[in-house]
Length: 98
Image 1 (tube, rainbow, N blue to C red):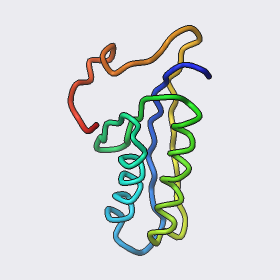
Image 2: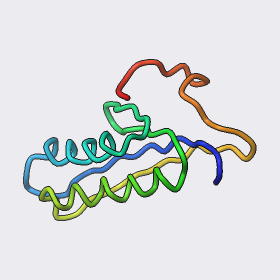
Image 3: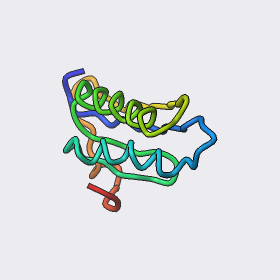
Image 4: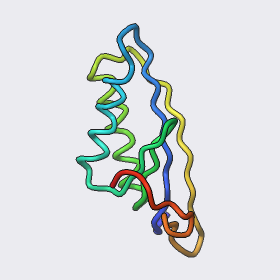
């Protein structure tokens, strides 16, 4: 895919430790990556180049493992177009993070 896409990612740490501090590590990775993103109650949606976003998703998963998760269960959704870009504006998304 050569166009801008949206990728939604939900990372659920599997561990006996508190989950939110581990999930926060994934969001830190996304924030530091410089990609545009929106944090929601159940998932984080990133906007950008498909390959870049997949790399960030992989790094976010690793951050959770490094932060103490024994395992992670990851759900991802991709919104892509054959001949165009996917944007926040068309979805009416004007709230959120970066």
